[in-house]
Image (cartoon, rainbow, N blue to C red; front, side, top):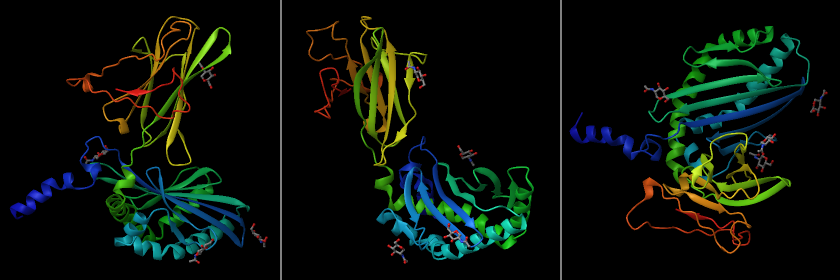
Length: 347
Ligand SMILES: *[C@@H]1O[C@H](CO)[C@@H](O)[C@H](O)[C@H]1NC(C)=O
Ligand SMILES: *[C@@H]1O[C@H](CO)[C@@H](O)[C@H](O)[C@H]1NC(C)=O
Ligand SMILES: *[C@@H]1O[C@H](CO)[C@@H](O)[C@H](O)[C@H]1NC(C)=O
Ligand SMILES: *[C@@H]1O[C@H](CO)[C@@H](O)[C@H](O)[C@H]1NC(C)=O
């Protein structure tokens, strides 16, 4: 290898899209989710969506099985390499799939209606190894799965139907060979192409907006609610601080699961049960990649404990950000919602 080429090879991981530059990068998952309702022997309603991570990239029109791209960059990426070829054969594949399912249903004397779900795709790890998968479910239970390396279908339930389907699919060597290629090589290269064209969208960062308010289910209980919304990507850390110390997990602390918003951002809430007038100060602390090494702090202070203080400011200096001079970012969003106890600021 020529020295410049060797250098390029060595530094390729740094030049490639962001995911390789970051050793803590998450694996990329590309998956096609397909759901088909077989109402009777002459009908099949097929719907499908493809996702890169949590981002929908295209859907199948159930009326005419044409593909609709969600973003121009997906269109561009799909015009390259195997993807264009796969797209042009998608209707043939769907027709064969529908015919095959009807045939098996007749052989196995399966009653209509039933639903078949197929999940296929691959996971690409930051170390550039990839892992392909294709799972088939019937009426909500796992039926069979393709083992890519062995090019075999394995039953995922003890039923006769699962054995029959697995055996018959495994015997079609031309198809298992093609699937192996699609789920490993084509899928991996499609992810890389998508990441190249869609970098800006995939690395999108949306700042969390946080608000603290209270609920009093009984006169003796006060619930502090920290509602965090509008953030992307999904990964986030939300904690309550009592007098500056993180409240450990326990029965008083309730954090919801992370729920999706309609605009492809996320939300969650964290509820801390406290005794009214307990004399402590509380703050909700949010950490998210869009904030870098800073944290968002939303203090809550008991009205009665500090009636004259307009804005309660709790200072939390993170070791990582305790730079000389202590630069402060003070952020004030959702002005209409903010009261003196819900001002948020970023350290
Ligand atoms: C099969 O199901 C489809 C969709 O539900 C329906 O429109 C059609 O009339 C049915 N055909 C028969 C032969 O039952
Ligand atoms: C498929 O149907 C949709 C409407 O449901 C239409 O907008 C689209 O142009 C059709 N595509 C083809 C290739 O016919
Ligand atoms: C690559 O990373 C994955 C996930 O971290 C790991 O399971 C796999 O063994 C790694 N492969 C190599 C060759 O390092
Ligand atoms: C936490 O959530 C669970 C389930 O919704 C509920 O039963 C429990 O009372 C909650 N605890 C607090 C402190 O809000």
